[in-house]
Length: 198
Image 1 (cartoon, rainbow, N blue to C red):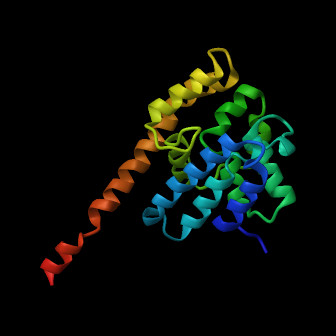
Image 2: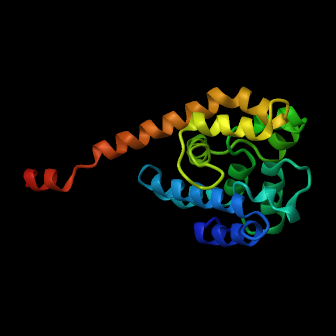
Image 3: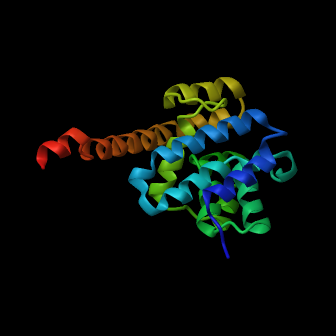
């Protein structure tokens, strides 16, 4: 049976990231925390989002690197070596506008053929979680996160070129999810409001 539970994903991510890549593991834990905050707007898809949050960077694990493009390497591992469901593999493969970086690397056709775009709502939600979490797992504004990535990789790196191209899409996704989450919070009556209405 295919699994996409967050608890299963957490242990799989821990196995591959905690010891060899402790900072990446810290980031992953922060992304998963952000995913849990979106449960009120995702309903029965909340567990799938959290599972994707735990696994989105698993392709960085040294023992899983193949192409050197972590979304593709991680998704292939999940598809070929685990019980991950197709929806989870596609979220990992396409997370945070990965198709744009794949173009920079000459891998766009491969990525699109093997892992078509996932559910757009979940894709935006995963982008929100990833792009509002620092490498150390703390919360950050999306613009600061993108600036930090560019500074870390340097002006000529493929990742920096990708970030420049993806900037409006990444910021747009984060803003859209933030607005939706804010509307959801405002629509839930406070305890004292409910008492007043009874």
